[in-house]
Image (cartoon, rainbow, N blue to C red; front, top):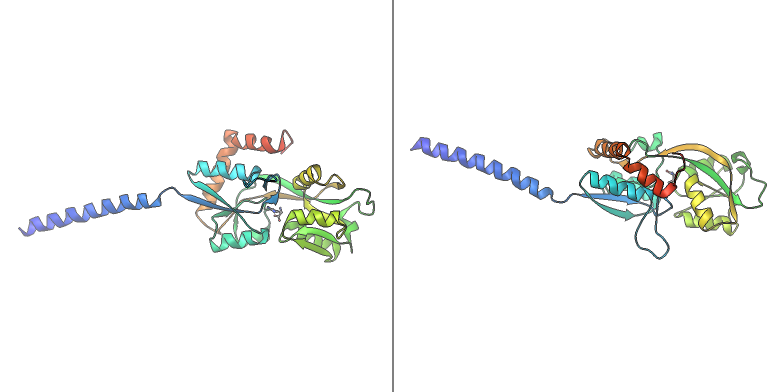
Length: 253
Ligand code: ARG
């Protein structure tokens, strides 16, 4: 009799664990990847005028990564300077926003392997011949987006005569209404804004700071190796190239 009870108990315990594991799996459900970005950075992340949808190179890339990880992607738009703190606090799982990999940022968050080679350029109004190179910015007012590498560069080059704005639309407006003499911004984004909205502005010279973009994640989190693996897979399979060409054509990477 005692033996039987013991036997029954052990069966029950085993059943309990098996059921428990099953339930655990189910509870995971369709997994959600919460992605932060800032949408005044075309062609990486932006809204076409009149459209609610957020599109761009980064958006296509992160949706492809989500598919690879079998996760549902939810995009959240926020101020640029709020992005990295949001990853740290865990409000979002990652940030993709044309974010330059820098040693300072790598001290507080993980950054993926580089996914896009970029650089900063100088933009002025057409006909402003006083500014030909970054050194000419000394004591001139430069417009930049708050929290960016451009802001940092502008502070060094102007002697702190910087006007910082939440959005890049405001940055270019400051150039247009002459409350700033120049803009510092990432080259592909400058090209987009000038082609589309500011034909009266020009890029002077070539990129004066080389940068590479990375995806931002919580420091030492389990997501970092997964994202790097998905990124490498997309590069190897040619899917990355398809997305790249959709946004940048045959331009060299
Ligand atoms: N690459 C620059 C940086 O990391 C600017 C990025 C701005 N991105 C944006 N979505 N507004 O600081």
